[in-house]
Amino acid sequence: MDILKTATDWAKAELLSTPFFILAGILFAATSIGLWHLGKTDLARAYIIPTAVAGALLIVIGTGLFFTNKARVKNFSEEYNRDVQAFVQSEIERVDSTIKEYTVQVFRIIPILIIAAALVFLFVSAPNWRAISITTIAMLTIILFIDGMAHARIAEYGEELEKAKTELKH
Image (cartoon, rainbow, N blue to C red; front, side, top):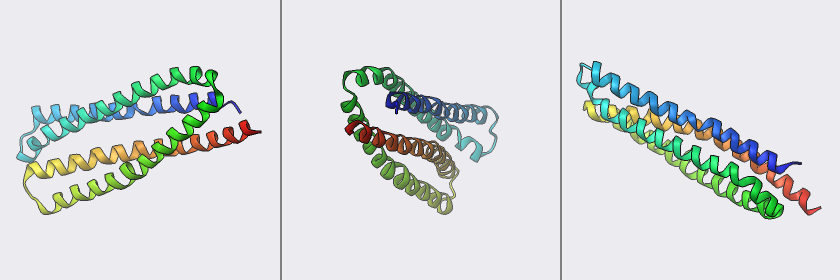
């Protein structure tokens, strides 16, 4: 098993998925600009700031993840060539830590925030709060969707690392 190729393939798959955060952010920003120019009702105008903020957050998240993973791809071969077992062990620890973070942040906190935003929408009729809650739900749903895919990829990568660890012991 070529664990270096597996690690590199995983990181490249992450590099391909992070631009979706950026794309979603651009769509939110474009929506904000469109509503700024064309929005006539109070509700339409109320969406301008929340969609701009959501767009900026998604662009920052996507850009940060992209450059982090790009740097990781460059370091893989260097770390692997230095010490294969240490590389595999450090990747296993990083994967385990990331999976725990996903479990708490993505699969618990984000759904709670979505529920909270839905409750705000249901019980507050002010246009600004409705726009904030709908935009929050949309942004968090996008994050949940993209991170759900990333979770599946990293879990699979973790299984490959465990196999490599077993093979290295023999």
